[in-house]
Image 1: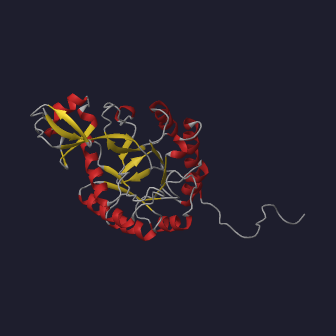
Image 2: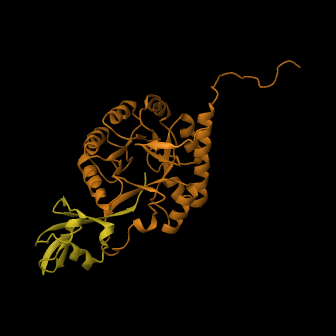
Image 3: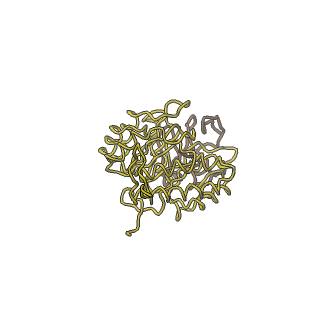
Length: 68
Length: 254
């Protein structure tokens, strides 16, 4: 296991997890989110190839209600 | 009469009433209100996924065949944060439209003009269709149109304040000088405020709180729809000029 940050919170994930694996683990549907890994926005095609490293900072963003 | 449609960046829309999706009591009420408003453009925001509620997002509740989803950069306090949110919005596979909002101060949520202009310039370069939320500043509106924004969205009064159009004089100048659509955004509290904007010649309005927080949001959405239609028709019909003294409408002699 390794420690990373997800949306500002420390989380434990399996070593060598890929981004797609992290989303599965968190039960977040791929098509409903945007991902920033250490400040870099990932393309959706990259989700299944990019490997997460210890200490990485992952931001997972969704679209939600909002107005003016 | 030729069909009167709102046209932004070459795309035509059947409604001049844009709706925000915030503050509705439930997705069901939101959906019913959007339908009653017969809106064609709805705004959404970008936030962190709630890890305790990972399936909570808005895409399931909005029919993209009916509505253009317009992500906003709400929450951005400077240009850099707005650029980040705009770029993130591209991940969702939506058309690359963005409502640019940069509001450094939470008390009045007034938009920062210089940060907005610099972010707008960059986003246009990155091929976004940019609709900036601005104070009713005619010079800024002109500058934003010049750098390639697809519309300008001057405020009537602070977001959610329901004060109506307190910036009338400046919005009139913006409309007079406009080379892109003018969408009055923020502060509209009643259908009469929306009608006023359209009567002045604004191309559209954006409403959220006044509908979402109404006792009956669905009926209020319909009321706004009717007001927008009335205001637009009045504008196209040529309003008479205001005068100080009476202009008798019956012959004065008996």
